[in-house]
Structure formats: structure tokens, C-alpha cells
Amino acid sequence: MPNYRRPRRPGATIFFEVVLAERPSDLLIRHIALLRAAVRQTRRDHPFDILAWVVLPDRMLCIWTLPDGDSDYPMRWRLIKARVSRALPRGRLRASHHRRAERGIWQRRFCEHHIRNDADLAVHLQLCRDSPALSGLVQDPLDWPYSSFSRATVGKVRGDHAPYGSTCNQIQPVKMTPNVPISTEDAATRLARP
Image (tube, rainbow, N blue to C red; front, side, top):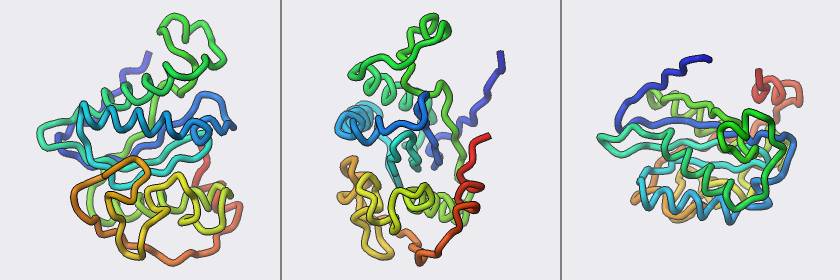
């Protein structure tokens, strides 16, 4: 079994992609209220700032900043996934799901990338913002209702505008780039899974 080593930098800013086990599916947007409640409860118990979050039908992309002195983002994801899973019917279960007492809703792992600098942050903010359009769900990514950018004003994303509650106690500057048409081939390449 592989031994995954995750960086443990307290106070880090991290980009995540969390995916459902069964794809394609619209489970996340069908149960958006449940997901929002799970995120709110987890943030109450174990605070973190949300810089960006977009929920697509079968996956989520988000950027978090952990509190100073805290690096336990896997525990936060475990809590969010468990709170959502307990409220939903079981997915298609394999023997490994039974052994681990899993419900077969989420992929076991999630992808994370520690943000290195402002340019890296800008790239990942743009990916979060543009992913609904790149996935073909909307023409204008700001029209996607399950995104922290959906009520953004040009150049600013306000914490109280995010669909998951207050993301932070200040206005976060975000560089909004103009909508650039992208080909289907390019979108598929950028969002392809290995």
C-alpha cells in the first residue's frame, strides 16, 4: 500500500479538488444544502478561511487558508465528507468500502496543492472561477450559482457573498480576468484526470 506524505505547513494556503466516487453524477448540487451545512459545522469546530470554492455536479474545487499553528486539513476533509455521507444513501459498495466502513460516495483520496506565491494563487483562483465554464455548465463562470464567485464584483470577492457563509473577515483582492473563449479540446486537456 502506498505511503502518502502530505506537507504539514501550519497556516498554509491550499488548493483542493475533491471528487465523488461515481461520475458523472449531480449529487453535490442536488444536496448543496447538506454540503453547506457540513462545511459550516466543520468550520465552527475547526476554523479555516475559504478564499474560493466552486461546487460542480460531481466534484469541488476550493482554496483554504488554515489558521496559524494548524496544519490538519485531512481531518477537516474527513469531517466534511463524513457529515455529508451520513445523511445520504449508500453508494455502490465494494469489499474495500465494507472493510473501511465507507459509504461509497467519495473518492478515497483528494488532490491538494500548497500555494507557493501570489502568481500560483492567481492561477488557482482563476481555475476555481472558470471551472463551471470549462466544464460546459455555463457560458459565463459568474453565472454558476454554486460558486463563491457567483456574486463577486469585478476585482473583489466579499466573504459574506460566498455560498458557504463568511469566508473571511475582510475583502479579499482577486484578479478577475476577462472571459476568454476556450476550445473544447483545451478544456478537456486542462481538466483531464489521469
